[in-house]
Image (tube, rainbow, N blue to C red):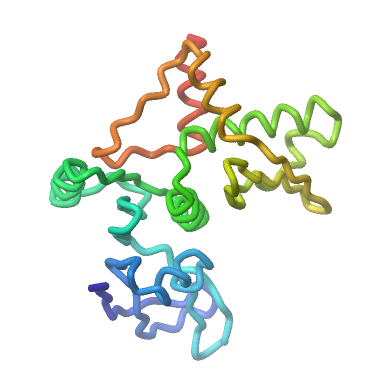
Length: 211
């Protein structure tokens, strides 16, 4: 079962303190909560005084037994009891990841539900960035986001967005698997240890290789 807490929170706009509800754990079998995680709605709050809406990124453990993955949303390392849990779940075939932002967390849910390797997604994201710039569609500094959208029939859709436009790339998963196999870089991650697998992770990996 999912678990929630009630706590006092200060509105970042007007400073009014009031009680909010945050979810500590979410079970993906509760489809309404799963949908609110993907949309980000579960993190939204509205101040009763100034009526402004804002996000509260609280620490959350998300478990999907059907697709066998667990996510830990936090910008800090997980405590020992969480790591012990993911080690046990790994023996049952679960993947685990730590997500540092709400957007990353929501996207990771969709990636794993689609049965896609998130390392392949990060490589595809980098390839899209390179192609976007090399084909003079825009400058790297103009890009506001590079988003995974879905995977259908073995083809990933990645959207590169700027302030005023977006460009969709359709990338076969098999192509990315071949790129991964042909690379001399070690992209292995320990699925049991709550690794962070995102663009920053990939950039740091390549930076270490270049040293």
